[in-house]
Image 1 (tube, rainbow, N blue to C red):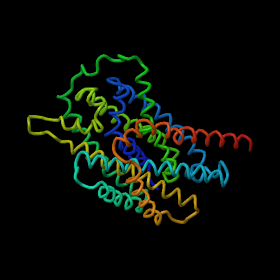
Image 2 (image 1 turned 120 degrees about the vertical axis):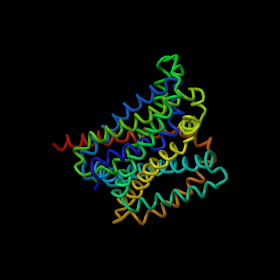
Image 3 (image 1 turned 135 degrees about the horizontal axis):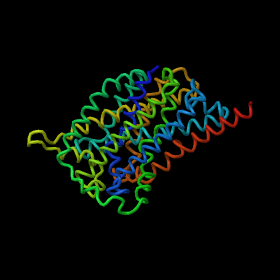
Length: 359
């Protein structure tokens, strides 16, 4: 069991996850200098998604997504729905691991084989998964103050580099580019939060977790918005749009008195920690869900075979970084809407209909 406070912190970690490094590029590419507005709209819509997931979980407070899918649709259709969700979680885990490998081989360790990076990080993820949800949540609780401190240092250090004119002219192309940017970036990370339906039954006093769910999403979303806004104000919208990792480039701009400078490791540190918790949760949800679908007593022995499958998929699933970035930009949001919006709405609708018929 984990507490409401730990859930709040874990949602912040998950929301920041990979988004803090890559989301500004997509938001500004589609929304230009108004990308920060799209980030705020995404956050508002994300709160509605959280409300949907919380409402669905309240109907089955002691069951995970896999378990109440069978409760709603019956044994066989429920298993098909559950396995489709688990495939989504697994592909999400693949995309996160791939992002780690691409970032390390393009920015920090260009001569290191990407397979070695995959194996190293995946080994830590498997270890965290085997230790269980409570250990993960407690670790997140320990690391969160450091992550927030590093983020605060980065934001304060960027203040002398701000150029407000980079935001102008506001709404130059009207509201359409902002709405398009909002839609294209919903899948990263707000639709992905459906994975928490595998966690809610293990939250102590989940009935009091509504504020934690909304607060964690709001807090994490504000951090993404701040980084997006800083990217526009400091490195200009044009440069932000063409960078794969604009917030990493942003951190390179920090220079105070020619002494305190080039602290891009701060941004990399925030990203590595938050992405570890996001990847571990997705991998945990996959392993737990497979065990529950197959009616197994424990999920831990599944972590190694699933880890090997994830390693192979990370290597062969994307030929290069350009292919992967295009997949994220064009396909990820509509794909995520199937599992983050349409299927949860269907589950909730059928559950309400069956309860009404039984009464």
